[in-house]
Length: 38
Image (cartoon, rainbow, N blue to C red; front, side, top):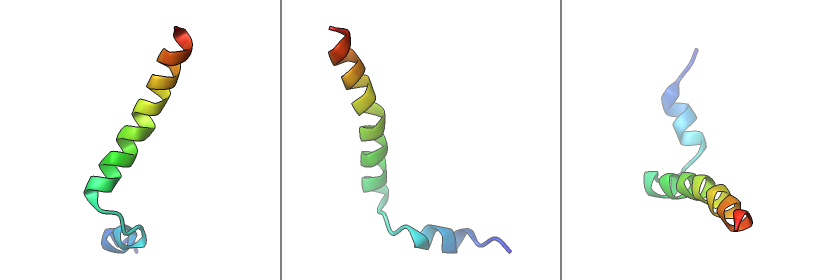
């Protein structure tokens, strides 16, 4: 019995913060690699 609505309610994160966190997780490694490359 899979209930997607319950899964969403487990993590109460607004879409804006989710996008912000994902963008940070993607950009931080890129910035670090670019910083260490120079």
